[in-house]
Amino acid sequence: MRKVYLHSRCELRPGDPEPDWRSIFSVMEARRMGRLLKRAVWTSSEALKAAGIAVPDAVIIGTDFGCIDHSEQFLRGVKGIDGAPLKPTHFMQSTHNTIASLIAIRLGCHGYNATYSHRGRSYESALQDAAMQIALGDIDTALVGWFDEMTPLLAESLTAQGIDPAEHALAVVLSANPEGAVSEFAPLDP
Image (cartoon, rainbow, N blue to C red; front, side):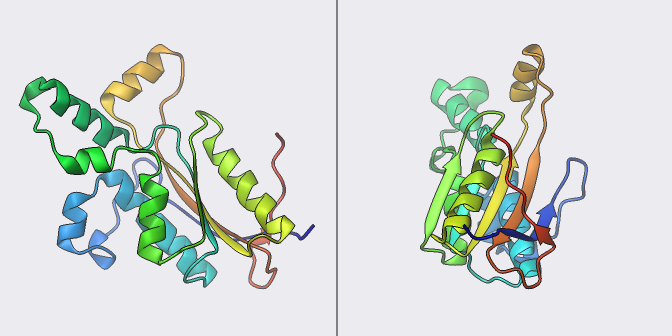
């Protein structure tokens, strides 16, 4: 079993100012993307840049709710609520794996691509998958992300269930290479 190393981390926290999207998106791209997708691509790009890796062997994402804002907008359009228009973009970007797919396509990563949607354990599952594959020698580098957005409807539902609603935009780069690593990656307890 090989050791696994953390090379970089990039996070946008709730309340942080939004980055200048023009540095990585054209105006047309940015117009079609929701806030979550922009944050996911930006944090992933910054984490990879900090690690000195152009294209990882794998893109592995954890998300509890996926692109929930687009899902809600699509469903509002289907139901005709508030005169919301039915837009194909809302449907195409409403699935959980949209995040990992978009990142992989933009990077030209044709390797392993996975999305974990295990409410409350999504990020941990993504980290464990990446660490296990690196330790076993199946891949050498992995971009691991945790991306979730909060809508008023979702926040209300979670609060009613006694769950603290939170947004996440976090990307880390793991590798088998100790050179330039921030630290050795310790396995998570199951």
